[in-house]
Length: 396
Length: 230
Ligand SMILES: Nc1ncnc2c1ncn2[C@@H]1O[C@H](COP(=O)(O)OP(=O)(O)OP(=O)(O)O)[C@@H](O)[C@H]1O
Ligand SMILES: [Mg+2]
Image 1 (tube, rainbow over the protein chains, first blue to last red):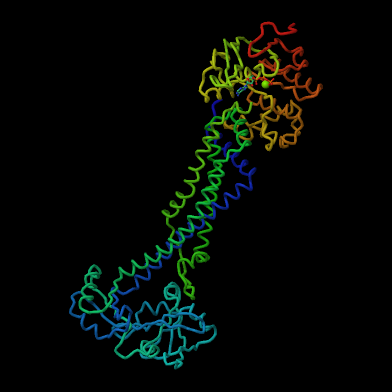
Image 2: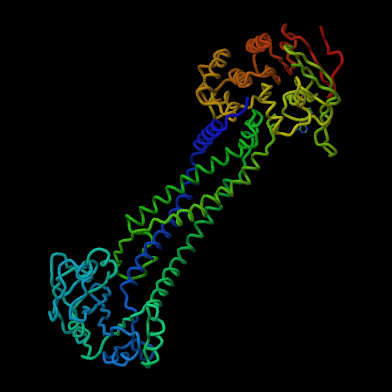
């Protein structure tokens, strides 16, 4: 009788399934640990991917070059007139001052970023900004109006109310009316932001008329950004010049570093998993030896035993992989990576409500598959082979 | 299908301090349809001889064949192939998987052959009926009595419809009436044209009317004239 290959595979798969059911507790444990490791690692990958997307959007909105005045290693306001000195550099487009600062809300223990409403050449707010706001922006020349990020609105306890107050350095209390809220993905990018008219920002922070927080410089040809940044640094003594590329590097470094911590934690989980796999794999108990001996003396070939072991490992690891990946997806896309956010987003009191949308990358999927299922199968290959070499006559 | 052993020897742990010569130059020929009883005291090599005949182990010397198939010096893989084609083996210690059902145990030899679950069942049920244990088919083996286990072991040996049936002390754990029934089953299998070889020192087996020949082993050697040979 020649074996029927597909029938043989199905029968051995069937036998493997019932074997797994028989050692339910142990296999469930392996399954759980395996799922957890895949879940953690996949969550990490998916979150990183989603944050990468986010950083990309942040960068797209960033100016080509930012110029900051430094005194004794700290940033201080810079005169808008400094722009005059840059006009002569070929390739420099628009240069304008920007007003922003951090405001510490001692009552709520929160930090806000207060930004002056950027105005276009015609004294008009950029169109992209008005699209990202529900409600309206302060009109040109209008004072005392604010646009808030949702998180700030909550922090200030503004549900149902419109007015809030901020302190000037001299403790004068300024009152503002919230006339708009950031929406959609913009809201995520500006999670701790209060947008005011530039004049309001100047007043709030008690900045002199000519002073700005920093200067933004547009460059006509994107390829010249680095060269022009270097020229600006030459022209203006004591300034720090930040190009878009450097911001990108900083993002990458932050994500990389934070993922490093997580990777360490993951390594621990992984080693636990390896130990478990090893234990499961290496432990060829007397009972198992007897079972294999019986199967072999009944006509099962060594190849049948190896296939049986392989099916067992594959069933456990593949299902664990799938459920781990699925859970990770739900975790990141639906629960906004709740378990990983503190790692990635640091210690800000305001937990920015970034809407994480993990990119569906086949590469990630295969990476996780390659570092979970493949090593597990490899770890169980040697013991499977050892089991397969149990001689048939051992049970006589 | 004639079985021939020529000068077959089996040495365990050769050239080691615990070397055992289990069989020494055993020669014999068994014709199709014979029912041979193999006698001998404990440790005389009965199980060893049956294992060689049953394509479970290879002899260390001599030659052996079943029909036109040489079985003495074969790679593991081919010996296993012959075993599942030619031999049904009823083991001395049953070798049943305690946690699996009677039906599963009986059909285990069919799994690697790719026989579908339906066909496995169709082939097993008549055997279980014939042996009077089909009402126990879904019981795990650990819940079966000694007699039921013995029948399960016989049913499993027959699942591939083998021309050669080998039984190692099949009545050792049974009471007399049950032992008689089991022997009647073997007699019936012999009557179907199968060759049956039984190792036993149970008088009930040795003197069973269906037995056509008695062989006696002593210290690994085949005695020319077994005691009490008719
Ligand atoms: N795998 C083995 N390794 C080493 N020695 C073995 C092995 N199997 C059997 N022997 C030895 O070979 C001899 C014959 O053993 P065998 O099992 O064939 O005897 P037996 O006639 O079946 O005995 P019993 O009636 O007790 O079952 C014994 O001395 C035994 O110790
Ligand atoms: Mg024996």
